[in-house]
Image (tube, rainbow, N blue to C red):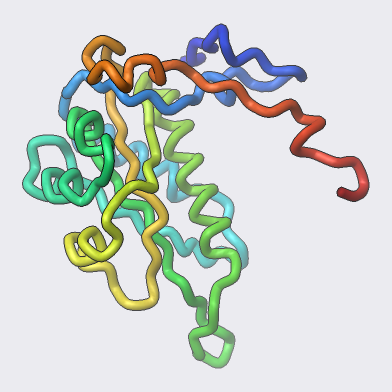
Length: 197
């Protein structure tokens, strides 16, 4: 399936349509995702690239209607619980902060966040390929969420992802409706330099 490319997201250079088609809406229909759908998202994240094949990402998920979903939703801050509560599933994206050496000692994994970002992007692109949308949020109570998901020591939570079927913009509170549109991107010339900064 080729995702529809939003009119507001026209690339400056030829690129696969999946990239400009991925955006982060806030309106969801409220349909629960089937466990098989969630497993497909997690499987996509599993195959993300990883330094030294350490695969530091850790994903904790719950489907709409489950008690764990409600707890995750309640840890969100600002407007996030209002709209994310209608997602089909929530996924907490975390990473293991250390990596074992050949001698068995645990040392800081300086690429853990970088690799975990790749896993999140894989999940987001899989969602679009399935006709779903994923919206990552940084607005949550870290301590509350860490306790809610029993985050082990030596791990960092990066975001919570709401995923599900896109709903109509008019289902959102009035103050969020105007923001329910794909955002533009900076031109390549502003983010990429040839040879040096």
